[in-house]
Length: 211
Image (cartoon, rainbow, N blue to C red; front, side, top):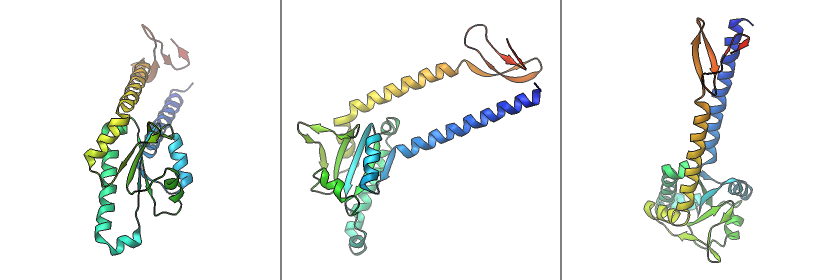
C-alpha cells in the first residue's frame, strides 16, 4: 500500500474522531444547564431523560412586565439566579438539568397544574423523571429566594446523589484514559506512523505489516 494513501487514510480517521468529540461536547452542553421549556411535551421529553433536574415554575407575563417595572426586575432576578446556580461546577459535572417553566405560557399551564403549583415561583427537584418527595409530598421551595438558598435546597435533598454521579463519571473517565494511554503516534523506519500497543513490548503497524 502506498505510504501517502496510508497517511491520508489515517488523517481522515483523525478528522472524523475530532468531529465526533466536538458533537459529543455540543450534546453535553445542550443536554445540561438551564433551559427555558417551550411546551408540556417538551418538558416531558426533557424530564424523562434527566437523571437529576431542578425545575423552576414562575410567571413571566410580558404584557404585565411592560407596564410594571418591579415585576420586570423580579423576573430578571429570578432568571439570573437560576442561570447562575445552573453553572455551579459540581452541578454541571453531574449534568443536572435546570428547567424553567413559564406559567404564563399557555402550553405549560397544564404541567404546573399537574404538580399542584399554587405559588410563583416554586422550585421542585426530580430524579429519573419523578418528583423527589419528603413523606407523601413533593419537596418544594417557594418564593423569591437567594442564590445561596436555592443551592442549599438542592444540596439538602440531592447533594449526596450528585456526589455519587460525579464519582461514577470520574471513575469512567479514569478507565477511559487508561484504555487510551496504550495508543499513540511514533517514529519508525524514517516515517511518522500510528502505532497501537496493549502489552510489553508493543504491537505496531507499518505499511502492510503488523509487528
